[in-house]
Amino acid sequence: MMQQLKILIHKQWKRFAVLSLFGVFLYCFVFFISYVSNPQEAVFYFGRRYGFVINAILFITENVLSYFFLIFYIILPVIREGKWKKPILCFIILYLIKFSYGYFDSLETNSMHSVRHIQDSKTLIPEDSFAWFMLWFIVFSIFDILICIGASLTIEWWHRKRQQIVLEKQRAQAELSALKHQINPHFLFNSLSFIYSKSIRLDEDLAKAVLLLSDIMRYALTVEEDKEGKVVLEKEIVHLQNIIEINQKRLNSRLNIKYDDQVKNKQLKIIPLVLITLVENAFKHGDLLDVKYPLEINLLEQDQHFFFSIKNKKGEGRKELSNGIGLSNIRQRLHLIYGDKHRFVVQEDKATFSVLLQIPIEQ
Image 1 (cartoon, rainbow, N blue to C red):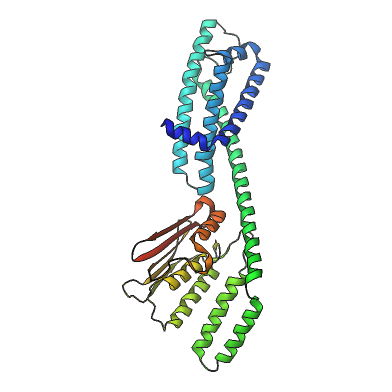
Image 2 (cartoon, rainbow, N blue to C red; image 1 turned 90 degrees about the vertical axis):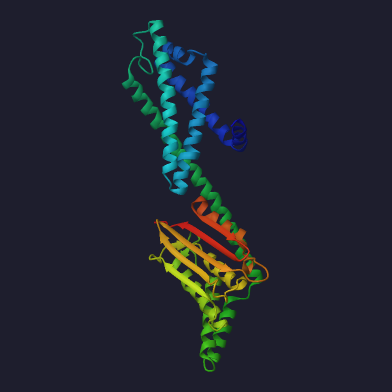
């Protein structure tokens, strides 16, 4: 237990340092307000039992731990993941502990008041009054929660800002790389259009394949993203189906494919080319001619999430993703856009390779 606590402090020392500085400020602020209101009572209350120094350390430690768990284990998980059960449980446990500690501390304070015979002074928590203790406990709890919500929103804003900067740098690098290494798209499309016009008179299937290839290349090279780097799912599905169709034509419809689309809202937004890349990888590196191991592609919309899964039998040769993107790059793009709200699970055994993608549907 102590070892885990040491590891936590070592990893999170910057956060603890900032919260400790805020705890010192809060302690000084509360003491100042209390002293201005009633100097005698402030000196008694802040110096009771252990003395000023020990009481200050206990006050700051309690607030640092409370704020740390409120921000990083309760509020931020709700903001980022939208899950409530575990954070609410943590919240209840935390405030049961704070309530128990505060109540028994108030009983001892009231007892010390009785010994000192201070009956006329106005105390921060009036003695022998559970109702007033509850009132002050609720007031201070609301104060703590509002501070932590503000801090959490600021942290999340800064986190997303940093992710956006990284994403924009990656886009700039990708665009620069495209300018340096890719063929001019207009030249490519014009060439494909010329080939299509010549081949349509000779072979209709060949002409249709050229047209499909032109559509796929046009989408891959000129995909238009919104300000969040996403496109409409419908466009991804159209070009995913184009890739399936052109590969079927290439192998005379001998590929074994099970395609199941259960998505009703085709206007939901996702980041482009991830689904297409995973499907293209299956065609390039999988064995799709075995009837016992068809290529399985599933799209599902459920519980405010979009699910995409793909499974194929492994072919011979390299098992890397095609066109140089790679699994690590896909993971990075997903993390930049969705943070901790997505799942990207890769599983493989000797015979098969599968990927499961789960992303939230944003309203």
